[in-house]
Image 1 (spheres, rainbow, N blue to C red):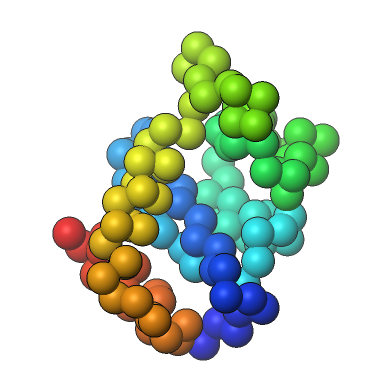
Image 2 (image 1 turned 180 degrees about the vertical axis):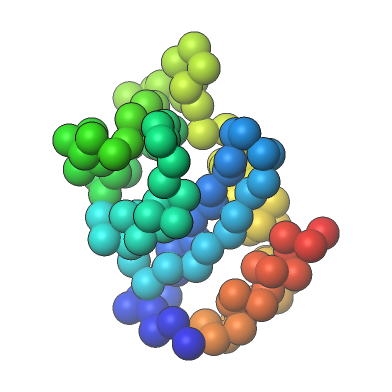
Length: 120
């Protein structure tokens, strides 16, 4: 069971542009170590990571294992040519709507709820 440090849970959404697969991953925190763990399973010869302006992603820019392209929503930037996170944000919106009727989801059941959503 994942122990969460606050009531606001972090759910990462990874969209694989090559396969079209989307992954929903609950996490203890939205920090650099969590992000590195998520990306470690997906390392390829050259991996480009498209993100928003979350500070936890900033160390990826100095890492030779990744190319990072990003948009900063707080600066009013939502897409820059081919760089955007619209797929993930759309998926997140759908997840929030799907989870909202299930108010009070137990933290230890969140993964099962997310798996059920992915099957849909």
